[in-house]
Length: 251
Image (tube, rainbow, N blue to C red; front, side, top):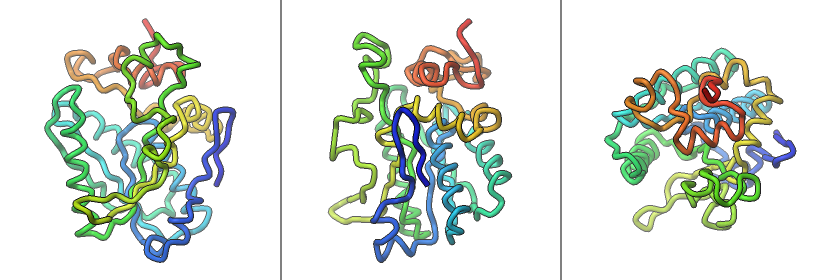
């Protein structure tokens, strides 16, 4: 299935390694890293549509990591999953795999290490070979301006000029041994692409309000009652969708 608008095109699932690889094409389990944000939720949507379209014999394992000091993304992920179960009764969802980790603000290494540990565990113990990730691209500098907040504090790895270092599809190698596969269908698509697809696919009313992008903690979010409207991820969502989490706008 092709998702296309003025900001780009995603030919979802049409990856030879998925459809033709002797091992991966026979896999029965697919994990989706469901963070609670708009990107990972849209990846889950695309997968469910593909399963429905082709009647694929796949089990979907929702996979969510939770910062112990910011529990809200688990709440969002669980609400999103409930909605998808209603939208796609034909999809076989496995139990939601949730793990929690300690995390220091502005230190993503702790989160990444825990993701690796649990991904390798599922690969080894439950034969989960393929992970779908919602990582998307940064806003184009030419659109937001060189002095923009969205340029200053962006994650450089999300820039689209990194070529081979930012592959849509890759196989992970650890300790010299290849194991699980990683598919990032949105790797070269920025949030405005997502905003267009949410509108085209009628996802703004039910799915969008369940997503959350804010990464701040209790003291800056009124004890998680609303987005901070200050962090990078809040600003990116506002840039693309015209509002923050839950449809909030500037005061």
